[in-house]
Image (cartoon, rainbow, N blue to C red; front, side, top):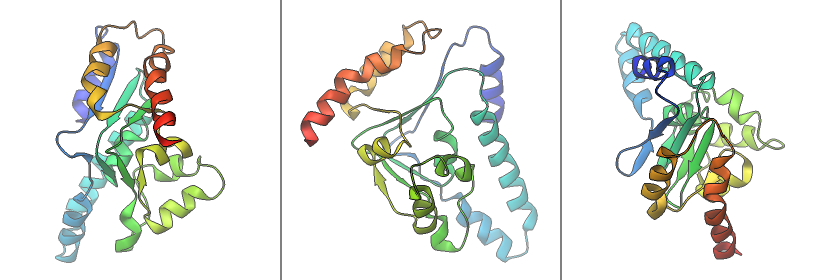
Length: 189
């Protein structure tokens, strides 16, 4: 993935990069299980290599020079949070489930979580990092982990609209989703 993102970043014909999952999850993490398993049988180099690649990719995304949109329609945990939470725009749906479950296996939230969790109001980021509590899409939007909400059924339309917009105008995205946001508030009021 790192190589692809670097190519897109340097390509003058690429105006915007969209990250999206395939299936029921954006990215559910889980790679840490294989890392821990390898370490338990003495293969420390696998874990070191895995984390070097993961953290390098997370840093690239956090400092990306082009608009980066994460379409989070499903589960996003652990490493998936590291990929998506550094995006310029983090769009969630009614299917989104977020958590940093590393604490359940004795690890600290990594993948840049100290950056994005520390920016949440009050001590909410600490709470999420220590408990691994799950949030839905509306809760992510409310606390600031997400920037926009779009109903899952509207994602194809949303992506099509993004494809044909001038991405020099970053204000376009809020206009596209504002009608959907009003609809969300009406349905949850």
